[in-house]
Image (tube, rainbow, N blue to C red; front, top):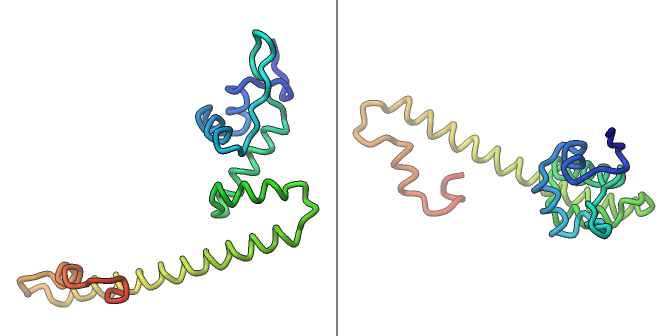
Length: 142
């Protein structure tokens, strides 16, 4: 029997969307994906709409949106509320830029500590280990 994309079992949906069955169940528990009715004595069937919804969720996650944020985006997914979607994306961009700035500070701190290790090999205590033991907050390290 050849299954069409409009009549997928949960396993077929998982395969078509590139996720696991457990991911689908998780999305259903989080109300990100509706659980179809089960016909009397039958198996629940999913459609291409469900595949598209999962792809939307995964694409949103790849852009850094949390599942709570994805839920908000799904409410806008008819495409008619571009201003609201733009505001959500702008907030996400600001978050990403802040994380990048934090990572750059971490990178510089690590480079400095590594440099200290290379230049003071004769010391008894490694400068990197000493610095980590002495620091009490992120600001002290960065």
